Each structure stands twice: as C-alpha cells, then as structure tokens.
Amino acid sequence: MRFKCTASALIDGLQIVVRALPGRTTNPILEGVMLETDGDGVVLTSSDERITIVTRIEAQVAEPGRGVVPGKLFNEVVRRLSDGDIDIAMNERFIFTVRGSGSRTNIAGQDADLYPSLPVIDGEREITLPQDLLKDMIQKTEFAIAVEDMREILTGGLLEIQNGDITMVGLDGFRMALKRSKCADVTEDFAAIIPGRAMGDIGKLLSDDPEAFASLSFGGNKLHIRLGSTEIYVILLEGSYVKYRQILPASFATTVTVDLEPFRKSVDRAALMAREGNNNLLVLKIAAGEMAIESRSEIGDVFEKLEVQQEGADVNIAFNVKYLIDVVRYIDAEQIVLNLNNAISPCVIHPAGDPDYIHLVLPVRTAVTR
View (cartoon, rainbow, N blue to C red):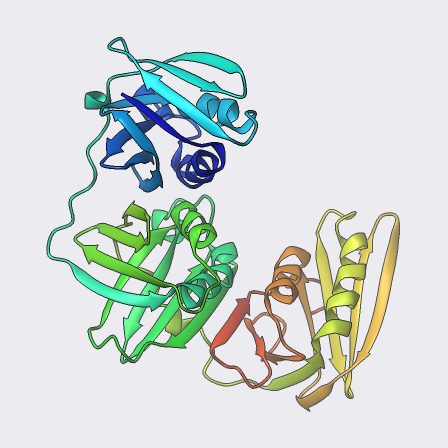
C-alpha cells in the first residue's frame, strides 16, 4: 500500500476515528486504526467493538492495500508533521513508513485480516434528522446518563420516537434530563438505548449546519449513522428502559419562576462553599416571593437571596450541588420554572414557556428541610 495526502486531511480524519479507540482492551488489534485504499481515497476505521467509526479522506493512491497501524502513536506522529503532503507506504511485513516535512518514521503494523468486520444491520428502520437537532438533544441529555451502574441500562440514553415526536432521555437514578422535539416526517414508533460513551462521540461528530442531515438505520441491536464521509456503527444496549413518564409528578404544590442568570450566578457562588464541605449540599428556602440559597461547610457559609414569582406553598429543599450546577449550565433561557411538592419529592425544572426540555432532580433530605 502506498498513498499521498495532505497532512491536514489525514489529521482531520484521525481526529474523527480515534474517538473509537478503546482505553483498554484484551484484543491488541483494536488499539490500531485500519487504513484501506478505496479508489481515489483512503478509508480509516477504528473500533472498541461497542462503537466503530469509519471515515474517508481524499488521497492519491499509488498502490492499493490495507493494514492496521497503532492508532495513538500514528495520530501523534502525523500531528507533529508540518502541513503539506505526506507519503505513507506499507510493505509486505506491515511496516508503515510515514514521510513528510523532511521526516521519516517507521511503525510496525498488523495484518488487516485480523481486524473485526463491520457490523451487519438486518431489517433496517431508517430515519433522517437534521444534525443540529440531534446534536442539541444529545448535548442536553448526555450528562445525565450514568457512567457506571449495576443496571447497565442506565449507562445508555433512550432515543424514542412516538406519535411524530422524538424524545431523548438520560437518567442516573438521582436526576433525569429529557428533551423532546417534533419529528413529523417519522411515522413509525420505536425506541433504542444508545450507550453513553457512544452518545458523546456521536454528538461531537455532528454538525451545527441546519442544512446537514444524519441518516440513522436501526436493525436488531445495532445502529448505523451516516454523516457524509463518516459512518458510525453502534451496538445498542438491550433491555427495558426505565418508565420515565411514571417518574414525573402529575401535579405540584409550588411553582417558582426565577430569572436564570441571577440564579446561575447565585448557585455558582454558593457551590464554592458547598464543595468544601462533606455533604456537597445547597439548600433552597422559598417563601413570600423570595428564594434564599444557602450552603455551608466547616470553614464558612454562603447566603444568597433572589426575588421570584411564587405560586403555592412555601418550601425548603436541599440538592446535591453538582445536579443544580448541571441544570443552570445546560438550560439556555431568560427564566426557568421550578416545580415542587415538598422537601422529599422530585423537583422538575424547565425553561419558562418550554415544557419540552425537562430536568428532574431528586432532593437530599436534611435536618434543615424536615
């Protein structure tokens, strides 16, 4: 195999596929990126067996072939070359030679026949979505997916299509993020649970261009996503997702509307002290149209007060500071609405006037809120 390409094209391609390189694996071949010539280009592939990413770059192919090169090392070697043309060759012993910027590097590779085949998707269901819509839904829910949990199902995010709506849900047992959008062109109802790590990688590869579209094909326990010159294959999680609608309270005793930016700044300041303590808590005290935000630790305390629009009973409620920080980080609106019942029931937060983006946060029971 031998081909020539620009350093920038190869770097861009590698930045896409190295996302699928495994952190640790018992199969050494997966530590590599497979390079395969394809007409007037080169196809790059990497996989951790849960997610496989394939992308194509333009190249001048002198000799066809395929081989596997150590992914992280190859990426670092190419990144350190100056912009311009790079010449890459592989001999019959799978030694890769990289030439560019007056530099030559030899890297021992492996036979591509040892590399896993691409997943095969049978009985496809296909939907097409704007990339910016899908990216926004992932960004607004991915953070709430459990990183580790005895219930593997919680380490994935739910993508659900029902009655012309597309809903994405992430939850970890302590909080939930839900984003719903209209998807009128999709008439079939179905659901899939996408592993959290794959969800994050997909989100980073999606475009903000409103004219760019993603084609998603589902078959069995597999998902295939086409994004122009890049394709993503994902092994989905199997099982029944949490019945998230049953978690949402049907009614609320107290509704509070607050300007987001002052609330964000107050939470941020109070969080500094909360993180110094052992319990990591913020306490909200809502009464007579005012909200007090309190935090304390062994070395001090913080008190903040905001004016709010309050409907219903007074309430004191405490939260893990991390979960409130995530709420104010991911909501983009002038005002937010907090819906509460009491100190031990879930709090549902959403942008004012937008019930299609919901955060549900479980409170922490303390002596202050009893």
